[in-house]
Image: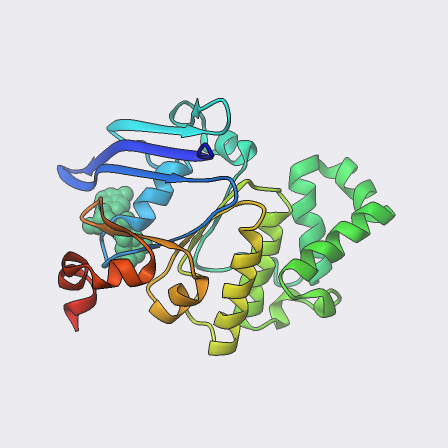
Length: 247
Ligand SMILES: Nc1ncnc2c1ncn2[C@@H]1O[C@H](COP(=O)(O)OP(=O)(O)OP(=O)(O)O)[C@@H](O)[C@H]1O
Ligand SMILES: [Mg+2]
């Protein structure tokens, strides 16, 4: 099976400091991957490179069946080919209902008039409901987004990203600030999403990573330190030394 995203030999320095150092990473079209590693390991910078926010000094980032280079595309173009990114703080429209937020997310894909007509059509209403169901918010469609819990806002934002139909979803520390029940729901949701698309999850919460039950990539000083099952990487002495053993 060929990779959806292939990052190869990528490095980037900020003021002489090598934040990413000869990093290689690849993920298949329907794969869930956890990325872990100590603070400053380069996890967020890795996502910045894939989404075009940061340009590497060397290396390649290729995408899809035709292996196009993402390094030649703008951030907007990278989003259009199918890379979606979830940032840590939710950016939903608090004064709008859950349903309205989802309609707005569908709109940015279609243009304003087409989206409005689509949202009013039976097909559009079905799509809004379907998106809400994917993240467990189907019973909350008429509520103002501002009334949702922190976790529910995160799920709404994930549903808004799904409206763009990404083939790869990058999620940075989704569990932060969530209750245990919310974290459990989030892992189940990410597992389900990765059945049909690639999902990369950066997370420090080891219980969360364990529940994802997927291949794990450990980053350290901008490079891959270890890769494999969680049991495999957590037994690795180098991983224990730099990450798990720190207290
Ligand atoms: N735009 C930038 N300018 C200068 N330095 C940067 C920039 N972005 C990241 N860095 C540095 O690169 C290193 C990697 O940072 P990054 O945010 O990718 O780490 P991280 O693995 O996401 O850490 P955390 O777990 O704390 O979120 C850090 O030392 C950081 O200070
Ligand atoms: Mg980070």
